Length: 190
Image 1 (cartoon, rainbow, N blue to C red):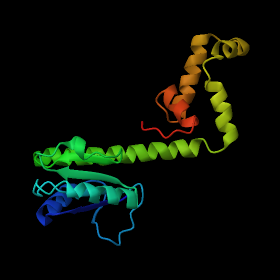
Image 2 (image 1 turned 90 degrees about the vertical axis):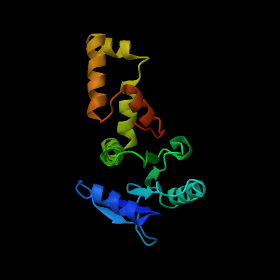
Image 3 (image 1 turned 180 degrees about the horizontal axis):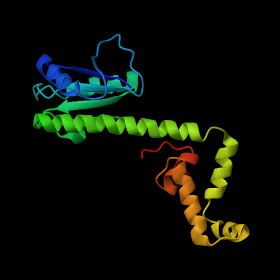
Image 4 (image 1 turned 45 degrees about the vertical axis):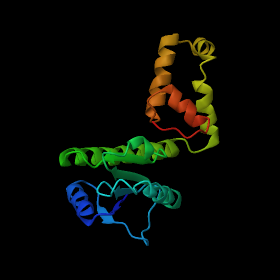
């Protein structure tokens, strides 16, 4: 995973790059020839831009999102509400008027959240590879026949539920519902 940075003010871009230099990920400048993947992060520094023409940047953000499919962190002015910026689940907004140490904490925590989410999806893809295993696990996780299965296996219902929850957690899911959503084929956000 790489972190790219771009913006309208050179001073703002350099200061955010300086803030992130001590972190565990490398920060590069964004240019048109960049090879950006879906797991990469693009930080868009727009908090020093005048508020009057700021809405025109939403089209640019949307075009970058459609072109690369990467995660985008947008630094915006204080007068722009963050709800108007978050057009997709891959866009995060940070108010540029925050103190510097808070901006660093927020940006690094969002990047770590993106890394954690990407690694969780990779674990989920690696653990359940073939449809046969997926169907066997799905059959085990059905709750409508849990009483029947626990009687057939000769164990208490409580211990059956405990084993089932332990199995779900060993696959990388926190809850049975997350596992059911994954096995149904719907993309989920943990």
